[in-house]
Length: 162
Image (cartoon, rainbow, N blue to C red; front, side):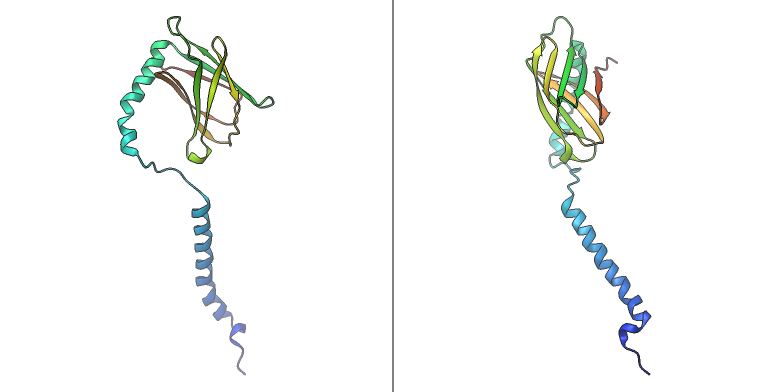
Protein backbone atom coordinates (compact mmCIF):
# COMPACT_ATOMS: atom_id res chain seq x y z
CA UNK A 1 0.00 0.00 0.00
CA UNK A 2 1.30 3.45 -0.97
CA UNK A 3 1.30 6.15 1.68
CA UNK A 4 0.70 9.81 0.94
CA UNK A 5 3.89 11.88 0.53
CA UNK A 6 3.17 14.05 3.57
CA UNK A 7 3.14 10.98 5.80
CA UNK A 8 6.75 10.10 4.94
CA UNK A 9 9.24 11.37 7.58
CA UNK A 10 12.09 11.68 5.05
CA UNK A 11 10.12 14.20 3.00
CA UNK A 12 9.75 16.46 6.04
CA UNK A 13 13.44 15.99 6.86
CA UNK A 14 14.36 17.17 3.35
CA UNK A 15 11.98 20.17 3.60
CA UNK A 16 13.24 21.11 7.09
CA UNK A 17 16.70 22.36 6.06
CA UNK A 18 15.71 24.77 3.26
CA UNK A 19 12.74 26.02 5.31
CA UNK A 20 14.98 26.76 8.31
CA UNK A 21 17.42 28.62 6.04
CA UNK A 22 14.59 30.80 4.71
CA UNK A 23 13.35 31.55 8.23
CA UNK A 24 16.90 32.39 9.43
CA UNK A 25 17.34 34.68 6.41
CA UNK A 26 14.12 36.54 7.21
CA UNK A 27 15.16 36.98 10.86
CA UNK A 28 18.62 38.23 9.81
CA UNK A 29 17.13 40.67 7.32
CA UNK A 30 14.73 41.98 9.98
CA UNK A 31 17.63 42.50 12.42
CA UNK A 32 19.66 44.32 9.77
CA UNK A 33 16.77 46.64 8.92
CA UNK A 34 15.65 47.35 12.49
CA UNK A 35 19.06 47.97 14.09
CA UNK A 36 21.42 50.78 13.25
CA UNK A 37 24.89 49.88 14.45
CA UNK A 38 26.29 53.33 13.70
CA UNK A 39 29.87 52.04 13.84
CA UNK A 40 31.10 53.25 10.46
CA UNK A 41 31.86 56.95 10.11
CA UNK A 42 31.49 58.53 6.67
CA UNK A 43 34.06 61.27 7.18
CA UNK A 44 36.86 59.26 8.78
CA UNK A 45 39.53 61.27 6.92
CA UNK A 46 38.16 64.54 8.26
CA UNK A 47 38.07 63.12 11.76
CA UNK A 48 41.69 62.04 11.38
CA UNK A 49 42.66 65.62 10.58
CA UNK A 50 40.96 66.78 13.80
CA UNK A 51 43.36 64.82 16.04
CA UNK A 52 45.81 67.70 16.53
CA UNK A 53 42.97 70.09 17.40
CA UNK A 54 41.63 67.56 19.91
CA UNK A 55 45.01 67.19 21.59
CA UNK A 56 45.28 70.98 21.88
CA UNK A 57 41.87 71.08 23.59
CA UNK A 58 43.01 68.47 26.13
CA UNK A 59 46.20 70.47 26.82
CA UNK A 60 44.12 73.64 27.29
CA UNK A 61 42.04 71.88 29.97
CA UNK A 62 45.25 70.97 31.79
CA UNK A 63 46.58 74.52 31.57
CA UNK A 64 43.31 75.92 32.98
CA UNK A 65 43.42 73.40 35.85
CA UNK A 66 39.90 72.19 35.13
CA UNK A 67 38.26 69.60 37.38
CA UNK A 68 34.61 68.65 37.09
CA UNK A 69 32.08 66.86 39.24
CA UNK A 70 28.81 65.79 37.60
CA UNK A 71 25.87 64.94 39.84
CA UNK A 72 22.83 63.13 38.49
CA UNK A 73 19.49 63.56 40.25
CA UNK A 74 17.07 61.08 38.68
CA UNK A 75 14.17 62.16 40.94
CA UNK A 76 14.37 65.83 39.95
CA UNK A 77 15.54 64.90 36.42
CA UNK A 78 18.48 67.29 36.70
CA UNK A 79 22.17 67.08 36.02
CA UNK A 80 24.44 69.49 37.83
CA UNK A 81 28.08 70.26 37.09
CA UNK A 82 30.53 71.68 39.61
CA UNK A 83 33.54 73.02 37.72
CA UNK A 84 36.81 74.23 39.25
CA UNK A 85 39.56 76.09 37.39
CA UNK A 86 42.68 78.13 38.00
CA UNK A 87 42.05 81.65 39.24
CA UNK A 88 43.27 83.13 35.94
CA UNK A 89 40.60 81.42 33.83
CA UNK A 90 37.08 82.83 33.62
CA UNK A 91 34.50 80.07 33.35
CA UNK A 92 32.14 80.23 30.35
CA UNK A 93 28.39 80.84 30.60
CA UNK A 94 27.51 77.54 28.90
CA UNK A 95 29.21 74.16 28.55
CA UNK A 96 28.39 71.38 26.10
CA UNK A 97 27.90 67.97 27.70
CA UNK A 98 27.87 64.91 25.46
CA UNK A 99 27.27 61.25 26.19
CA UNK A 100 28.62 59.02 23.40
CA UNK A 101 27.56 55.39 23.65
CA UNK A 102 30.54 53.11 23.04
CA UNK A 103 28.84 50.91 20.45
CA UNK A 104 25.52 52.47 19.39
CA UNK A 105 25.50 56.02 18.04
CA UNK A 106 21.71 56.05 18.23
CA UNK A 107 21.96 56.28 22.04
CA UNK A 108 24.20 59.39 22.03
CA UNK A 109 22.91 62.42 23.96
CA UNK A 110 24.03 66.06 23.82
CA UNK A 111 22.92 68.95 25.98
CA UNK A 112 23.84 72.47 26.98
CA UNK A 113 24.67 73.15 30.62
CA UNK A 114 23.85 76.71 31.69
CA UNK A 115 25.63 78.58 34.45
CA UNK A 116 23.43 79.07 37.52
CA UNK A 117 26.16 80.22 39.91
CA UNK A 118 29.93 80.62 39.97
CA UNK A 119 31.29 77.24 38.86
CA UNK A 120 27.86 75.56 38.92
CA UNK A 121 25.99 74.52 35.78
CA UNK A 122 22.69 72.72 35.33
CA UNK A 123 20.52 71.04 32.66
CA UNK A 124 17.69 68.56 32.31
CA UNK A 125 18.88 64.99 32.78
CA UNK A 126 18.42 63.01 29.55
CA UNK A 127 17.22 59.44 29.47
CA UNK A 128 20.33 57.29 29.15
CA UNK A 129 20.20 53.59 28.40
CA UNK A 130 22.22 51.21 30.53
CA UNK A 131 25.68 50.88 29.03
CA UNK A 132 29.13 52.40 28.76
CA UNK A 133 29.43 55.99 27.57
CA UNK A 134 32.23 58.41 26.80
CA UNK A 135 31.37 61.61 28.67
CA UNK A 136 32.69 64.84 27.16
CA UNK A 137 32.56 68.36 28.59
CA UNK A 138 33.61 71.11 26.20
CA UNK A 139 33.58 74.88 25.92
CA UNK A 140 35.74 77.56 24.34
CA UNK A 141 38.97 75.79 23.41
CA UNK A 142 39.08 72.97 25.99
CA UNK A 143 37.47 69.64 26.73
CA UNK A 144 37.37 67.08 29.53
CA UNK A 145 36.80 63.45 28.67
CA UNK A 146 36.14 60.25 30.60
CA UNK A 147 34.32 56.95 30.32
CA UNK A 148 31.47 55.87 32.60
CA UNK A 149 28.82 53.20 33.00
CA UNK A 150 25.16 54.08 33.48
CA UNK A 151 23.24 54.43 35.67
CA UNK A 152 25.43 56.83 37.65
CA UNK A 153 24.88 59.26 40.50
CA UNK A 154 28.17 61.19 40.48
CA UNK A 155 31.08 61.35 38.07
CA UNK A 156 34.49 62.96 38.59
CA UNK A 157 36.25 64.24 35.47
CA UNK A 158 39.77 65.49 36.00
CA UNK A 159 42.38 66.59 33.51
CA UNK A 160 45.38 64.35 33.02
CA UNK A 161 48.46 66.45 33.71
CA UNK A 162 51.05 63.87 32.63
